[in-house]
Length: 460
Image (cartoon, one colour):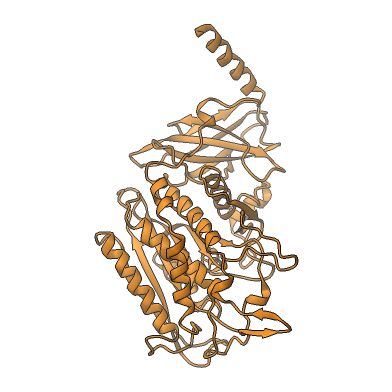
């Protein structure tokens, strides 16, 4: 038996040299830890449906709608969200911190007069000294609209857009606040999305000025429809993850210019975040396949994650696979036998629950994993068919080491990997940087892995 194991080990080593075998450690994948499974089990379809229907009951949640009423308008909606967050705070033993984030919007073509924009925020501070300043933010927008963007009195239930995303964030706060994580998690419901991402822009700009370390941001926007309107087919086993490549809104930074120069335009931090979510999805029993979309958002459209991308933070949008436009941004009415409007009866609550569970798994893994490796580089000092990478050591007490991943240049997801231990430099023999793209990710003792980081060239 010992001889057989030695022969197999030698064979594996020889195959690795020609790129055909991974080590036994490299085959290990992140599995739901002792903490993750109970989190997923507690996410409740009944809780999500109750919250969607409650949000839809405020008649309209238009950004400039009534703020004085206790039952109608955006003011009543945000006070109700705040009240629910405070309930979760009490159940968490006070760990969850709840607050309003307010400002006055004065100049906007979609607002008639100065209007207070109010985000409702619940923050779960991290427990690990070395990681607590690193933040992971998940959001949904609680405002709604009808066909006329300026109409702030008509019935605008906004059940799917975006009570579904708001209910997901609330459910994440309810369940996850019962647990502790190494890094900080922020659950945020934002206002003013339909008027131009107002609440998200305010928070992102303020975060940048304060140099907050937002390591990843998810926005959940329209996550409740599973029907393809053109043929009525059901698509409840997939979800879109929109991931930005090279940004186009500003002059290219040296970093993004180098990504283009080295063929790494599909390896931006946001695209790595999409790959991370995809990997997590393979290891949980949610039966939901993330489709990584190589776009910032839908064609020529935008969402709250855009505000964070514009400030340089990694961010993705999570959305249903097919939008049903007869129910989106529509006056509630029946016309030629077709029901228009974003009504609660059209939301697939089981699907929203699956998307919420995917969020929970990804955020919990991120918040417990080590931070991304810093200063990741690829040696270009000489021409060779080996590839040497280096990176800066992390400082988390539970850090186990690092894993190198690589894939052919035409392949979207990582194909090969090798755990290389607690080191800051490693050479992959016989795998040429001419033909492969590389990344490095950190691994802790529980098996949690960070998103990968694309290496930039260096010379000794």
